[in-house]
Amino acid sequence: MHDVRRLRLFFFLCALVFPVFVRGEASEGASPPPGGETSRSLQGRWRGDGGEAAPELEDRNGFYGRYLANRLAIGLGVSSFALREKQRDGGSDRHGNFIGLINHLDEANPVGVFPTCRYRFCRNLGMELTMSRVEAETTNFGSSEGDGKVVAQGPIVNLILECPLWDGRVTPYAGIGYTYQSGSFEERPWWHLDYPSPERYAAGGATKNTLHGIHYREMEVSDDTGPVYSLGVRTRIHRNAELDLMVRYADITCDAEFVFRYPDGTREHSRSGEFPLANTTCGASLRFVF
Image (cartoon, rainbow, N blue to C red; front, side, top):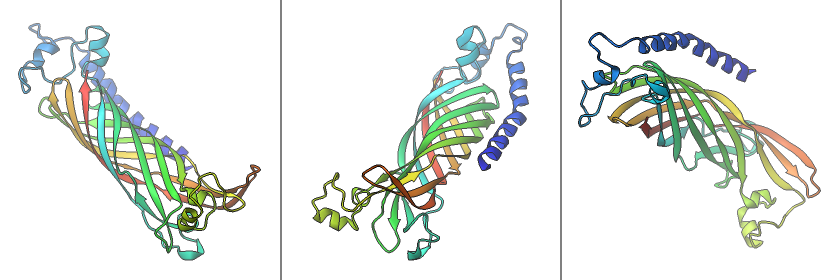
């Protein structure tokens, strides 16, 4: 039900800004000004990168000029995330923790590289497609050990409202979007093989395929969708290159289920919980502008 409401909100906001796109397309498709100046000649007024043209929309001749030039940009970025919720104090009775005895989450590999693609519909409206990955190490109550690492990764689609300044050389923007995150859990071998502790696992020879008890312990993590909000600023550093600095918040919570799996394939549910992976991400990206 929450996902349906989020989708309705996202499409409602898209409907609100669609008229901006229509008006922008109409103005960009207008005939050249008197005197025979084309959009390309008007660009020559800015020579901020050694004589190259300003980053306005190119002339509309041909497919490239109409749909790609100064509209499409692709590149790579570097980002770092921080979890919003990292601690719950449920104690040893397992109630109030994330799931079971897991009561603490720590960012794992918080710095990562991500692909990014942006398309500019008109002067004030665009869309961005990028990827996100969040990893968190678990820690159990009263221990320095955890059962494994929870991972959520997937695409993010953002609708971008932007305000070009100084002939488009600097463009602050705000974005609202949606993300689909695929959840998974990477169990530590000692926990998965039903050993009581890492020390017992090491004393037994640390054999990854040797089951200690009568069943395997597994954590099943569900996928999730959620809204994404972003703020940023882009600057054109060359005719065909831009630098993008952004901060983004994604609201993600993956449901989890702890199960016992027996050698004959039967499964037994133990308990349910959740991993709140809502996070704030800061990043910088460099894109090639067509």
